[in-house]
Structures are given as C-alpha cells and as structure tokens.
Amino acid sequence: MILRPALRAAVPLAMATLIAAPAGAETRLDLGAVHACVTTAADEGNSPQACVDQAHAPCLSLPGDTRNVTSLCFNALRDGWSTAIAGRMASLRQDAPQRVATLAAIELKYDLLAALVQCDRLEEIEQLRETASEEILLQKSRCTATASGLAYVRLLWRMPDHVPTPSKEKDQ
Image 1 (cartoon, rainbow, N blue to C red):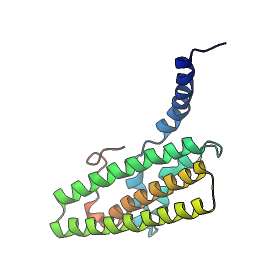
Image 2: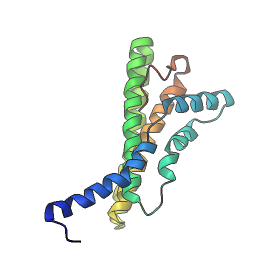
Image 3: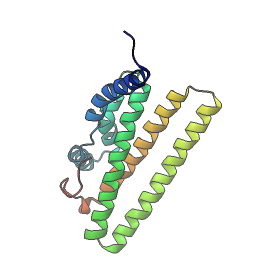
C-alpha cells in the first residue's frame, strides 16, 4: 500500500496517540486515594512516602521498552501533583491561620527546590555517562513526578488539622 506524503506523516502521530491514550487514562491522579493513604500512614506512624509510589504504580507497571510512553505517564502525574499542590496551598491560605499557610509555603518551596536540584544532578551525570536520551528523559520525568508527589504528601502530613476533603481539591 502506497501512502501519500501527508498521510504518511500522520500515521506515526496517530500511532503515538493510540499508544499514549491508555497510559494517559491510567495516570489520573486519585487524590482521594492519596489522602486515605496519608491518613493511614499517619495513624500507623509510618512515612507517607509509600503513598507516592502507590500513586505512581500505573507508570511503574508499563513495559520497560516503552520509555517515551512511560515518560508521558510520569509527566501527567507530575502535572496532577502540581495541580494538587496549588489547590492545597489555596485551601491553606483560605482556611488556615496566615502563619500556618506561610510556613507551608516555605516548606513546600524548599522541599521542591532540593528535590528538583537532585533531579538536575542526576540528569547531568547521566548525560556525562552518555546514557540514551530516552532513558534520561524517563529518569527526569520520574524524578520530577516523585519530587512533586513527595512535596504534596508532606503538605498533608505536616498539616493534618488542615487536611481538605478531595472535593475541595479537584482530582487531577
């Protein structure tokens, strides 16, 4: 079968969309499950870090040979975490005393900065090692999603008296 040039160019795009669509459908961040996980961790005296791994399970279960799709999956989760962080901070600014909201903003800022600097460090080391670009992208996507997820669960963990219901912070 011979394809015209315009159609030939559209086929890879359509294939990428078909491949990425299931990953995107699986990467919706379930804030209700995250809140429940953090609450359970607090009740049991455990660290909430496992809650991020639990939320990342759909991306972690993708086949190893689909690095670009997996990177897109982590990027979608990072975007969800970012939206959740913004919602959480808006909720704290509205409902918590100013001092608490300001403290949360400071903690968030430095948690994220420290983690993202480590993501950049890892990226530069892998570039020096001449690691394949798809692998570097995957590592960076996973690292930034994890950094954002940890920052969010720490906001919940540190301010348990100000834990919102998932309806206040839209699921992403």
